[in-house]
Image (cartoon, rainbow, N blue to C red; front, side, top):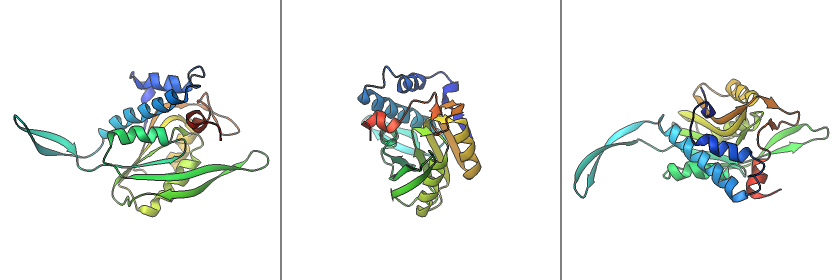
Length: 214
């Protein structure tokens, strides 16, 4: 299932518009904060899909019942660009365990590239809900490779992929390669992908905009 959150009216659209806007992008702190807020909005949306249980709460004035999550999802992200968005999820799922994967494009002569995984650190995920956050879902090949790498830690019960901006091609590729227990959440979906695998209009390089050029 794919949720295109730009189809609805919410404050998320303001955050998406600002991370795209070249007149705003020069403010790295604002870019990181907007990515963080996008993660927060998506965390709230995904929280509606979790399992809940009733819990008795005692306040200074009496008792109350509350529906609270049975368990917290494992939060995963791809270094370095995913860190601000990941923080947004962690702000809401503050009891979650975390997984970090280092992936990058290794370019060859002629412009072709392949995805390399250098590092992965995370908890056991067997039977848990897994959220993988990455600002951009371009070709989808990085996401698929990262997911397969994380499977070293077990088989999750459900996977949520959260991205600020996705391409149609990337979404279709992920859907074709990942199992049916995957839900994709996108802040916006763009139609075009360049020969260099950049989303158009997209926003540029999320890692550089957040942390400076490599």
